[in-house]
Length: 382
Image 1 (cartoon, one colour):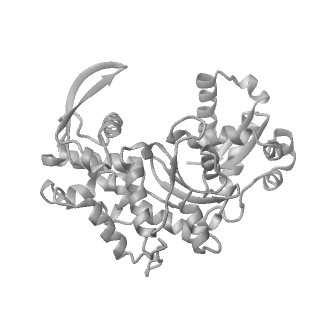
Image 2: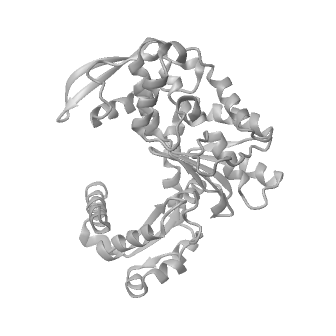
């Protein structure tokens, strides 16, 4: 797929969203400024494409680029924090200090909400104590079935073992052209608490390297049965895996002996690795970030997620840990970055970071280099 094709598709999608969702037509774009949140790790070429679409193709008045971690921290009222963002396809951790993202602390791993959906689906297919899906919802390749599984996950999955559904029934509606055509019932059991453990110990379910969603289903089908899954002590397994990694009391994660081998880190290990890689990581500085952990993303709303993450981090670090989720002013945990965006727009420095359409057309990338608040050279650290 060519760059021109992707740029054209993004322009069409954004134009549709502005018109249908915000009521702003193309003729009015020139009257509006755009705040664009970018990932902490990005390709510089992508930023040039974004600026070209927003300013040159769509004709907006100006654009300001800010990193997601900074917006997430501002959304909870903090300028110094370790920001943990759990999305659909990946989880990212980055430390923010005095309003700037620290390049050496940025790490991501391909494990997100979509992978939990896949593991939840595969475990339910196992039957027995895991649960049971209706025969009509048994094809994870169909987008409709994926949406049903995601909705079922949102209402049933939990990391509070005491609240694990024990054969509870949940209604499932199959729609066609916005009309309900079939109603089924899904039975949910231990799969509701086992599937989310991908975040806290991915090695428990996936002895793989960089994995895709389809690998989750394939691996669970090949390696696990209802009989051996039901005997797993999940929390003890998590602690044992952490000990096997040889983590220190400060929570740092040693590098792999094989530089070509892809590390599979749990979320607590990824947080520890990020904090351990800040400049001059003395104990006092590390404690500052452990005491200001910010969660972003809808997955963090799962029952018991914050409490169990807090418990694991406190045991591994031996110190005080404070986790903040949800916007300081209003909103939910999956809205923190957007709330932070509204805070950024009201800051005095916001005006100085605007890339005006006229200036961009005349000077191009030189304006982008001059008007940003992030490290341009270290953008693609993995």
